[in-house]
Each structure stands twice: as C-alpha cells, then as structure tokens.
Image 1 (cartoon, rainbow, N blue to C red):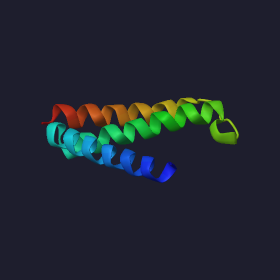
Image 2 (cartoon, one colour):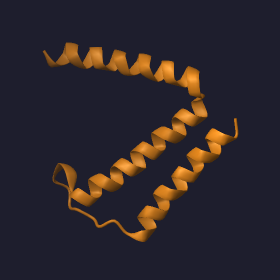
Image 3 (cartoon, rainbow, N blue to C red):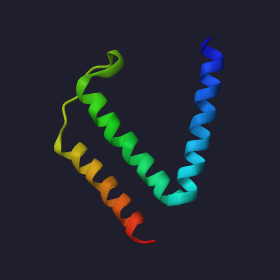
Image 4 (tube, rainbow, N blue to C red):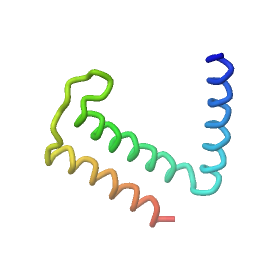
Length: 79
C-alpha cells in the first residue's frame, strides 16, 4: 500500500510545484523553498528531531535565516 501512495503523493507534488512556478516565477519559488528548508532545519535542530542531538538557536543561526529572508524579499520585489 505504501508504493502507490508514494507515487500519488509524488504526482501531487509535481503538479503543485508546476502550478506555483508558473504563477510566481522559478527564482521566487527556489528562494522560498530555500527559506523553508533553512528555517525548518533551525527548528528541527533546536528540538533534536529524528533522534539527532539538539543544538541551541544562536545569533549566527538566526542571522543566517534573516539573510535568506532578505534574499526572498529581494527576489520578490525585483520583479
């Protein structure tokens, strides 16, 4: 049952990504996706997700996320 479900979910992700990229531009999509990954990893590191050792949220880590946010804003406003 897992394999058909993973195929359906992959198909859904493909169509959603295609739909979003057409509407917002590839550059903004990649920038926003990078922001989601960086912010998500910051939170998962703080809680020690998936059995990994936890790391505290420090100023350099927050600065890194802030820089990515600024990058997304620059990409969004430069259209």
